[in-house]
Length: 360
Image 1 (cartoon, rainbow, N blue to C red):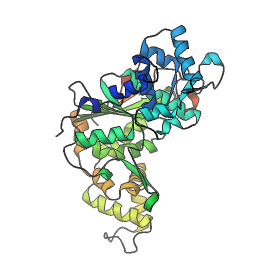
Image 2 (cartoon, helix red, strand yellow):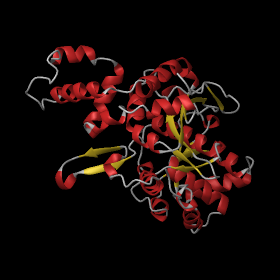
Image 3 (cartoon, helix red, strand yellow):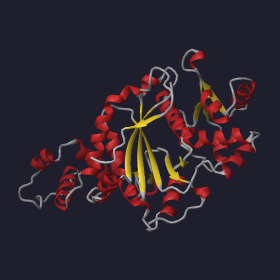
Image 4 (cartoon, rainbow, N blue to C red):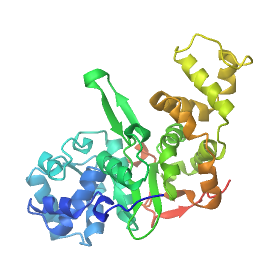
């Protein structure tokens, strides 16, 4: 099904990028850490640097952080008492230019809640060395264009389009979430998702956007990063997976939904091809959360969004264990900002992964 992809394309933290950052006077370990920060988060905290490099809290750590701040490479952000920790926002444009990511949005200011979410993703990537990790839009698109045998058009991949005419811009893999790809002879791909709300409305859209890509790879895992505050929401997220993948649409459903969605947009004036289905009836029939998420994706991809969930392939993947959904509790405390994204109030040890959804 798939073709060979060179090793240097299986990881956003590639040797050429590390060498480019070393040219700024950083050691190899420091440069490798900074490339991880640049492509996955834009921000980090001291604990992450020490864990990555194996350097204890002391003069070496102090010197590295001081170099970043005094050299203008990073801006320290102290959201509360200093002893609660600081985060460092790496904003220096030449660093991003050096790795070919001049316009990476990680450079831009963001809310503290968004920064904390990015810290969580950085931890998740650094903790799992079984995969190469892709963090940028172009890295993901380049990888899958090479990895998949079929010459899919670009609009087959998850994307959002903004504007019209000359101002039209398309962003691929718009959820901006890290993707783990096999790099040691394996076949499994890992798609990260962070729970930030009790109701999985956005998660449903994420699943539908990636349905075609999931069908195209041999084995896949959706790893749901679960803040302790949202433990009880795990059941709703499991149901969302069942809705999206375990109950494929019939061709009749697809026809009705396409008519209903176009009618909602005011695109059709003619009656439904089904004489028993009018707009009010369709609204009642397709009022569940799964269909509202499907409508959001339909607005992005038109009828192709419906075709993606008509096939039983993803249901078969889950039943055979080729597809998995697992919930990983976040292992660390993230400053005093954790209530913004539901992170744990106390420090937990280790990344606990469980609740695999292999069958339904």
